[in-house]
Length: 267
Image (tube, rainbow, N blue to C red):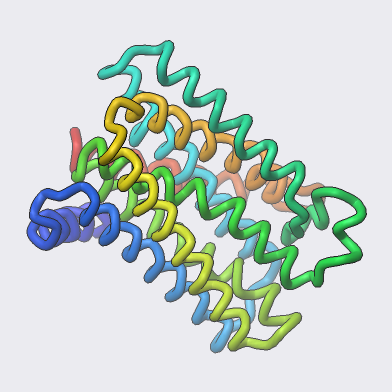
């Protein structure tokens, strides 16, 4: 089902964009924004337990881990060689690490991270929104860079990330809705999705004027995604009170979905 959907999406995006990577990046960015918004609408109708949120985050981690390799790191190494891609990975990890360290933000389960003095200055809603941006901007970069490199690969990436953005949109909107109301939760969810669109378009636009930076950009986006997955998501899902078997199965489901989509459309 997911692979058939991805094939249809690929055909539509190639037709509408006319093969232009920038236009395709915009469309792919809108796709992930739409799915994030769709997921955030769930706060209007349902309640979910922390276990289900952990499963959704685990699914997202599986998709993100595979997409960082199949969409960026491995194709980049194959075409441009190991040194340029490895340098980009290191820069991506360093960039998001610095953002993570110096930007005050609040996680769903781990709580506050960032400069101690900022915790008292910002409301919890703002801290949650900043955490969402740290998470979503690398996703947008991955979509934009992958699409610039190859529109079919970009569509695979957008469909996979868009799929995991549905439960992720709910996970984003839920804590905000409890603090500021359901409308605010949906609004923050929608804006978090649009941040991915902006990041995707900016990445593709930059590469359109500096195509020689593509190897570095592929490594950087992949490294940023790896950091978010390993540092932010995995510690969240493997908490002391989490069901390790269930979150592992959720992770593997996302892992296999991304592998399937990549095989069906680019294999």
